[in-house]
Length: 487
Ligand SMILES: *Cc1c(COP(=O)(O)O)cnc(C)c1O
Image 1 (tube, rainbow, N blue to C red):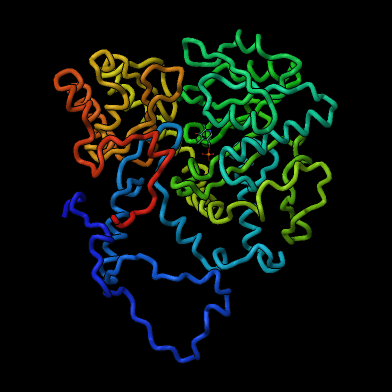
Image 2: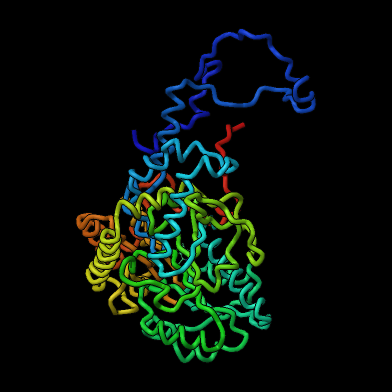
């Protein structure tokens, strides 16, 4: 059965066919009207499809096959680290000692879970070179906001309320200026130079006594290592500002470089990227924040500490920015990240960054003939191509991304970063085989040839998916999330 033939559930409906069988009542029937009030009781039967259990099973299994995920195919989405999520993580997260506990349980009865959280905090502190870590934030952007609120509290405690500006490079992830704005700061842009790195002269120009912080990703979102980081840290610190590290993707430096050693004061991590928490579909994620000792008093309360061999929560934090998440963070994702870190060990984590960086450079060098390479230097875990050459032939980067769907690949990130024309941002990750990388490269080269010889084939792609080009604006603004029976 091809995907196109996949019948929809309302079309299969046959009057009075059922997908369940229930025993007769062995207790007196209750009058629903009395229980919930007559106004709430529906007057007519719901218009649901009438199908068998097997039909409904096939319906949902069929729907699941229409989706693309890391478990079904290559997913080189730059800045998102769509890498394999080891199934060992799932086994551990399902242990009843972790999955059947409740946040209101007395701490004495959940010492194992708290021990895991404590150890995870310590591991993340060691990995990032920070002094203390909170596991509360639920995502990367949430971590950014939490970190910036701490930076705000820090400056306010010193009476420096004039520090209202957060500097963000033009190549930054969109969440950076957004988080700065939501945290009550004004986002100020610093330019990149022709190397793709922060322009030091421009940085000196924008830094002043109003600077609260510089937010930086390193390697940056062009996949390049900011080699002047120590000088940049000095410029910002001398002006009284702080350094915020966007550590959503740590794949390139794990075990090799630490934000704390580069001079950063506050760091967030995405456990749902580098640390193999499942990622996509809107979460749940986890965005822990690490800080240097001078920020510890501002961390979100409560703080997990150890008192006489007992793990406890400390609520007595007068300078805390307050709780940022109900309970203690997304515990299940934290269990997965902990399992991953313990499975890999320090040496394994170093291998992660080695393979991630080698894979990205291998791909970049093999693709540089067929596409424009705006920054011709060694990359870290991801790299940027430009579809400028193909655009002149009438084939846009969007067309090439759609054409990749025909080969069963999720396209790379496109049109980001915004400072590169017709950008394609590719992140292969360390978990893919050389065969997969080679096949993807061959397909990309094939598409570049098609752009020259058969542009319509690319412009009209995809040819093999259930739906072809959608009205993406309508799809985002007015999504049809429910199949409804035609009247
Ligand atoms: C993914 C990402 C974020 C945002 O993380 P979310 O968990 O999606 O909020 C921030 N910065 C960078 C560089 C990222 O790649």
